[in-house]
Length: 88
Image (cartoon, rainbow, N blue to C red; front, side, top):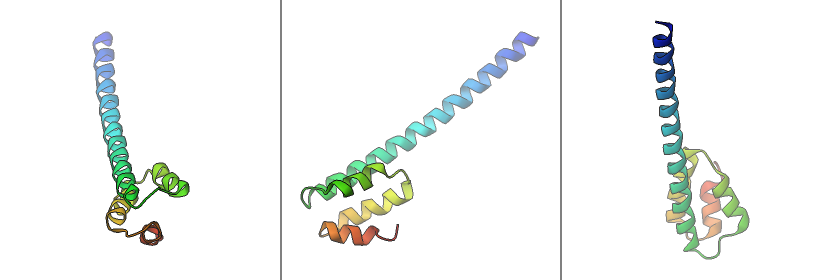
């Protein structure tokens, strides 16, 4: 009986860990996709300044990245983009 219970607990823990890993992978993919979108849109404005590239690539908050996507899609210049994200 002890071995059965031990195996059940191990199986439950494995499933929990798998679920957590899946969620983290989904989150990371979403973050990477948003970063790539931002960089592609900003690249249309010209060579992206290093500090701006760093700002985008180091950002991990999905809500902030969503705002950056919108800002990069509508920005007419890098300074316009900076202005749009200045309150983040």
